[in-house]
Structure formats: structure tokens, C-alpha cells
Amino acid sequence: MISVDDYLWFVDEALEGMVDILTGLGEELVNRAPDLPGANSPYAVLTHCLGVMDYWAGYVVAGRVISRDRGSEFRAAGAVADLVERTQEARRRLQVDLAGLDASAPPRGTPGRRDSALPIGRTQGGALLHVYAELAQHRGQLEISRDLLRAGG
Image 1: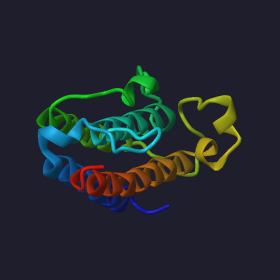
Image 2: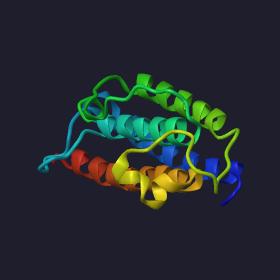
Image 3: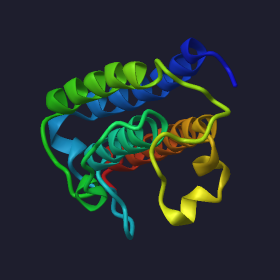
């Protein structure tokens, strides 16, 4: 596994890219979903990413008690500045959650039954790779959403 500092560099790159997209879209477009079946607004997508970080790094890796309503993440709406602030706080919390990381050790929190047999649920490092994969995937989704929303779609 890479160092925590190197891992956080990759996380920062993904988060900063998503924040830049939301900031660039502004208040008018950030809460609008592209005109595609099942699409989510950029605000909701980043909110979901913060939930992913909290659950997988906070609970699964660090064993921190959390409260997550995954369904509400996809209905979230609000002001860009508020979400940027929440993103910054989530990033600071992630650094604290990783202070005691043992990448090859089992998770401190118990992932769901379906995930516990997968690499994402067997080790702390696997859970962190899952966090990064989700951030990278959703950053790409936001890039496409931004383009569609700016084009009026």
C-alpha cells in the first residue's frame, strides 16, 4: 500500500476536481440533474462521495461510529459554498481516520455482509482503494454532467 500522504494526494486531486466543477457550475446548475434517466445533480454526487468517505474510511477503516442515510445523499441539494465547506471538513476527518491505518489488517468496522467477502471489505487498504475508486469514478461522472448541463441537457 502507498503511504497515507501519497494516498491523500490522490484523494485531494479527485476532491479538488469535483469542487472545481461545482464551483464552475454555480448555484443555477449545481442542483440540476442532466437530462438522462436516473441522473443525479452534481451537488448530490459530491454529497454521495462524502458519504462514501465517511462510511468506508471513517467506519470500516477507523471504526468510527457514523450515521449515514445513503438514499438521502442522492436527493441532497443546497448552496455550493456549504458543500465546499463540508468537503474540506470531510478531508480533514479523513486524515484523522487514517492516523492508525494498518492497510493489511482487517477493518475496524464491520462492512455489510455482501462486501465483507470482497477485497473492499477484507482489509483496511482494500476499503481505501474502494474510496479512491468511487471518487475517481464520480469525478468523471461530474465532468460529463458539467458538459451536459452547460450544453442545456
